[in-house]
Amino acid sequence: MIANLTYTMEKEKIFPLFYLPPIEYFQYLIRYNQKVVFEKFEHFPKQTFRNRSSIHSPNGKLNLIVPVIKGSKAHTLMKDVKISYDFKWQRQHLMSLQTSYRSSAYFEYYEDEIIPFYSKRWEFLFDYNDAIMKFLIKALKLNLEYDYTESYTEEINSSVDFRLSIHPKNTAEMKLKTYFQVFEDRNGFIPNLSILDLLFNQGPQSINFLT
Image (tube, rainbow, N blue to C red; front, side):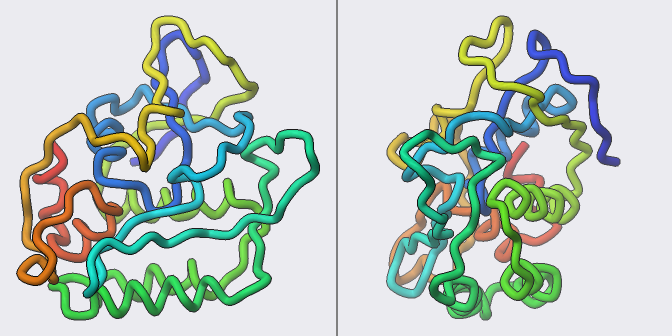
């Protein structure tokens, strides 16, 4: 069951909305279940998981980046960031996922549900990430209650702020049990990839690796 909560900054844990978030992100979501709000009003920071994700390709770690339209000199709020379709990145991302995970145990189980994310166009990055998040919550069978911020607050009292701590340049603090990866024999085990890596390889058992 997914429900919205009345937003109270003092009680909630604040998370950004990422594109195909890393595994660590869901470990924290589960830890703070029923006390989560997603940030809409932050200024969009570059080079973060908000528009990029990492998967395990035949050649090792591969970054998938959603291009965004360059705004004016003023900072753009996350909710107002628009996706660029100047080149066919959706086709590129889908082909990369298919190449990387076609032989995984559960890719075909989820394939029909992920294809729309690479055929339909979303105008805003936040809405795109939100739609993906709803799919992932359902696929992982998470009983997660959440809401969205109504304004931006720089300092958050009595809460946990993950807007900056979960970052591509930071090493994941939470430990995860290793699991089978398709190209592990070639590249070794690569930790903290997109949640899709865990989902495609472990399917319904993914939740057991997160808790």
